[in-house]
Length: 456
Image 1 (cartoon, rainbow, N blue to C red):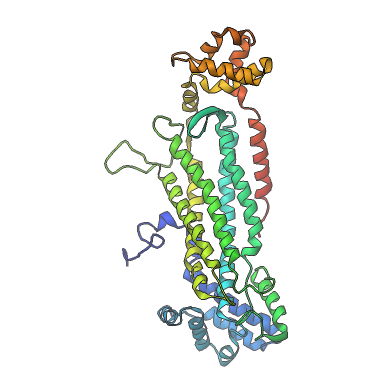
Image 2: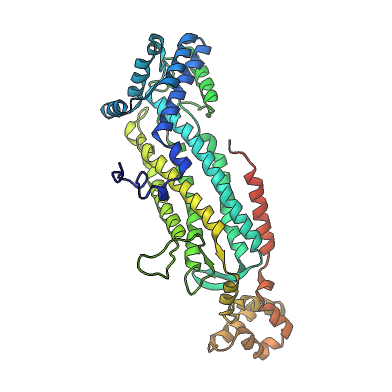
């Protein structure tokens, strides 16, 4: 029924802003049950291969898991009563299956085995999706960095005009962070997709001498990483994933902040080109909605990152209360990042880069932002400190009418050291972008290396 949902993630109005279709499917209840049913069928097959349960039992358990029609209202009611969904699900499978299913289903397992392995299976899907999206965003950045490698703009530090740079180099700064995020995802992936099979208290007692073999074969069959030692009280890998997501949000938020700031009317150097974002009352407005949403999603991601360490608040073999937090933190954190990456890709692919306005804004300073360039040219003749003091003293007397070139030309001290050609060259921004091209090239080369590495 429309209009009855209570969160932005399932809202009829807002869900498209806060969820990405593939990520929504990954964290759906349907997929959750598919993971649990796959686990039960797989552990039965592995145990039959090891002679722990009869082969026929494994066949019938797999058939029951494949053919069961879930009674969702009963499962929801059972979950409310038990506090976890695993026992009510096992009850339904047993009731729908043969006596062999009832006898051998869930052999040697405990609820946490399914919960944690189900999380690992969905994190595997999640991280592969995020990794691919990050590469797609990186491709957009790469193309823009190449196209605008020589597009001069004002470099601003602490919100103040500083010196000359290019839009291509600026964009390559985002890409450098993307490179590190790809590396982080590669490193944490094996830890994040580590499953669990340990039985009631993690020591595999209910499986006996075949416990270690069962665990290894099960994880291999599920495509998960085999755990080392006992991990029942450990949630560090999950927390690490959420924290990594927060770092990626940081890059996307910086991009959004720059687009929003550089798109202000007096600056107008870059503009969102997707359309939309109109005002309900002011016809002239086109609000930067993509940037706004990326900023909002980043704040959500950082909120999840600040709350995720609460899952580490464990004691004894395990504690359920803190573990339940991942039921909400992981799906929401995953959707928030995925939809933000989707918005960022679209933002970049439609971004309007106003090269003429970038140069015009540069020229508005009357070349004053080339003061370091003049200083360094002069420093080659008279030393850095004397050159700095001389140029600073001249600029302190400027009345706002003259350009830097005019002031320098009017200085006998500077003209004694620099020719008119040297002064003109020092005031040309493209002559003072240093290792711009090399910095862009090494960042792009690193991205090309990273993107071909298969996370799986």
